[in-house]
Image 1 (spheres, rainbow, N blue to C red):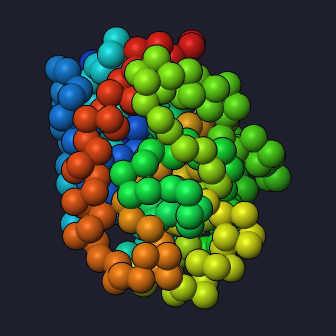
Image 2 (tube, rainbow, N blue to C red):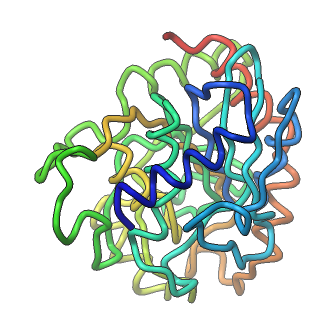
Length: 273
């Protein structure tokens, strides 16, 4: 994936819209419902966009939705791409490059995650304060195009501190209890073993999932500020002594739909420019 391909994808999208999105939304498993709140929407299937991969996971519709949400011009990914689907890291993060080309300055990344922190409960929303890349790969490996970002990007504030503060203030206004914590990115697609969960807790992880980290790395490389939100869809292996299923993930995200929608919309409505 190179800059020429990024520009071709962005030009195709621009030909189909009459807005300039400043906020990007990546909607994880079961969380794509937020895109249905977008006003005056333009929907574009991933299969129609040059160089875009296809989403193959249940709970991911596989389309872009562009329009207005709480007074902001937004571009939402209703479904994302995962490393475990067989895509390489540059394919997984290609949409973030396209968002940058379209003018996106702020990215909200959401996901469904397993709770590692034993004080969490399924249905909690967690503001991501930092992450651990446990995927054994990076979307930044290979030759670097200086037009797209620096060779050695700083990750000391991968999740924007001002946006984290803004998220907590938004939750307070809604009287919504949100957690904070470190997200661990694993490759998947198998869920973790109990021993792996204990290891990740020792390393400082609070939640674990199979996405987000590559997209956040590329967003930082591109100079986009990031806010990350996890929906704790289940407790990770070994905590509740029960098997884990994707159906449980979708069921839990459906239960917290109203809290999730209200939280993100409140953050957008009051987002500092």
